[in-house]
Image (cartoon, rainbow, N blue to C red; front, side, top):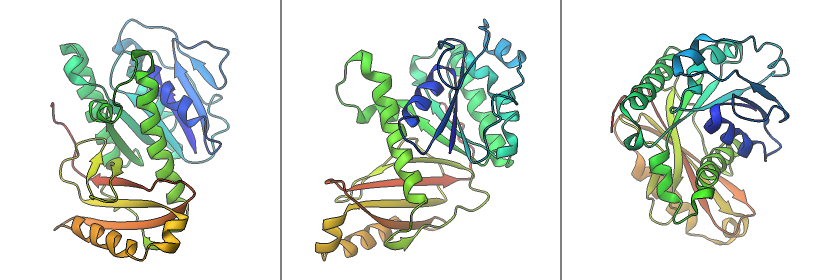
Amino acid sequence: MNIVGLGSAGCGIVDRFGEHEQYKTYKIDSDIYTEQLNYFQLKKQDSFQEYEDHTYDLKDYFRNITEEVCFAVAGSGDTPGATLWVLEQLKRYSPSVLYMRPDVELLNVEGELKERLLRGVLQEYARSAALNRIYLVDNAIVENFLGDIPVTKYYDSLNDIIVSTLHMINVFENSNPLIGSLQRPQECNRIATFGIADLESGEENLFYSLDLTRERCYYYAINKKRLEEDGTLIKKIKSQVKSKIQENIRVSYGVFPTEYEQDYVFCKAYTSQIQLKKE
């Protein structure tokens, strides 16, 4: 998979994906040193609108892309103004978008308007199938999983949680489960988020508070030895999955063996409803 990051936040996500051999990374920004691998430097502009207006031909930069693309961007700052013309040059690959919503309570009025505009436009693109899918992440929600960390490690820790979760989901979506079957999302459900759940309690923690969920997928990553020895596990998993089934919500799951000592449950949720809430 190819990961393209725009702006400092998008490039931070790209750096974390680059730690895994499954990804080819591309970074676009105006503030990163040009000697970095696969980096395209934009001329620094003074506003969101100027980044939108000053376009570049990225055909040569993207020449080695031949497969799936995920475009990472955050809804803060001015550099994301370049989002639409970058996506225009990626459209042949039917890209997905990983959109990180900043803590809007800390944005000024102008910043909040830019964030809401970009989030809304990207969801409209997804609904019209100009994007394969958009994954929404709310940094204010993900922050709750960080605990107490030094200021200098805040963004690295935030990115680690986002990337490690999505990476594991990507791995399982390209693997065959021991039991269960993961349904392909319906074409209309192109707005999504992901997160984690607790195997014992079933408590679910999505990285974005998604309205009107229509589909949910659960990825059970279970220690191989436990899968071989725990006779109660399958009943627990099936009971948990059944408890998620509601009217008008499709639910699927898969169970995967791992070498990790700890068991994990990852999840995805999908909707066709554009998420425009302010709060």
